Length: 124
Ligand code: SF4
Ligand code: SF4
Image 1 (spheres, rainbow, N blue to C red):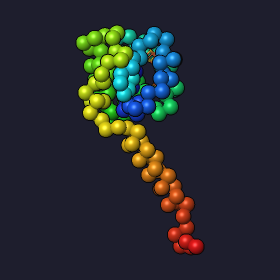
Image 2: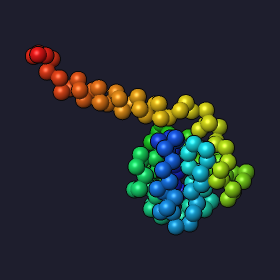
Image 3: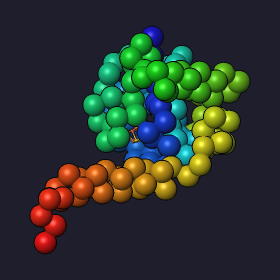
């Protein structure tokens, strides 16, 4: 069993999980981090510290990020223990810049809140 880092980490990479991991099995790519499934001891320490909720037990991965189980394992398949600093998995490399996507989403949420707060019947 292993934990998996999914898409919310892409272009965030604050490394809070790395500090918590007792076996140093979280490695850094160019745009995201990856958990080596052959080294992870399933301790759960990384999951609660992630500020963007990118870390999941492999059995709890949301359906839209199910492929990240393979993304993490394939990253190490050919070069176990040599993850740090390597180019990203092709799935991650193909993603558009996530800062723009996340800013758009937060902007949408703020505009939605403003719309809810606005009194449409008495706009003055
Ligand atoms: S579950 Fe534990 S061993 Fe596995 S990556 Fe997270 S902190 Fe490291
Ligand atoms: S704590 Fe979360 S966002 Fe930060 S590097 Fe780890 S997985 Fe990525």
